Length: 338
Ligand SMILES: NC(=O)c1ccc[n+]([C@@H]2O[C@H](COP(=O)([O-])OP(=O)(O)OC[C@H]3O[C@@H](n4cnc5c(N)ncnc54)[C@H](OP(=O)(O)O)[C@@H]3O)[C@@H](O)[C@H]2O)c1
Image (tube, rainbow, N blue to C red; front, side, top):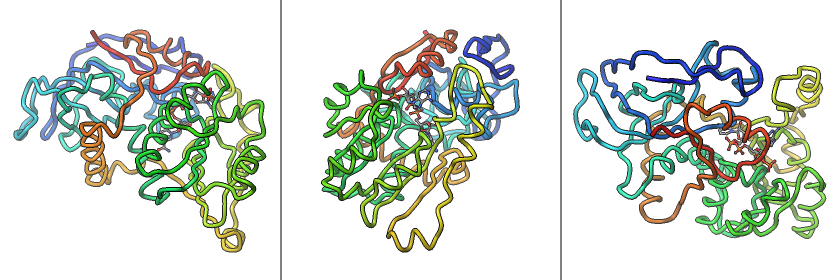
């Protein structure tokens, strides 16, 4: 089987396609023949050497796949029969034509779900669920600021806000604003040319938002957009990615200028600052599994619909990374295997 490796840090073209034997599913695992594999910003960061959770290089990243069960490891029975269409959380190894996955991380796909849609669900939607439901307690009438709203997590967050009856203010490159409005965003802000803090103040009549989701690293400003009892969820630092290769001279000042939030200030401001890292919840697979099953039910009921912005053949993973880094994607980027 072919897989895509990160042999060293560098621009997208360092990604290398290698051929090798299929993995053998161990006890409690199944072998999934991959048809679609989700690309995440974390994979781009891993390639750049900016993702501390990535496996040691050379490595194959990839958090999620969809495909068919091809082989059962010892002790596997139940509803994961050979030939079953499944979606799986992989941490890591998803950029491959086949992957062995423990069964608690594997879910039968709804009938009418495509492989591409399935691969667009786990990371984006689970992250949005943790931020908006577990921590954010999103309610009808809430105002939610979603940064990079047209991205993979952003689009998932918009859909969950709509289900809750919350209003979304989204930031994104200007070319994506029409799509955001179609998705139900009330106000779109171009965060690269407009001061989003001022815009949020203006749009909310000075009150601020109830929840702000920030993976760009503009935490200080996002904090200031919060209304009393507001919650800032920090879940990434895409602002550290300044080019197609890593430039520590640009990254270090950004890291150094990250804010510290003092408890006394949080108390007096009546605000919360929250951190989310889905990858650090792998030992809570029981909870993630429950949420995945609920999301698949949401899909079947027509409440969520993954937005697959663009697909690339697995062997063109480098082009997929470049596409994301050039900020061209709307929704999820997915690698496909014919
Ligand atoms: N903590 C967690 O558990 C967790 C889980 C999933 C994702 N995340 C984080 O959430 C963020 C979104 O992830 P995603 O996978 O859904 O990606 P994504 O939002 O689809 O990422 C691409 C988009 O991010 C925006 N962007 C902002 N800064 C950028 C930069 N420096 N370079 C390139 N694009 C930039 C661009 O949109 P615009 O054109 O609108 O700027 C781009 O199109 C990432 O920071 C990721 O690390 C965290």
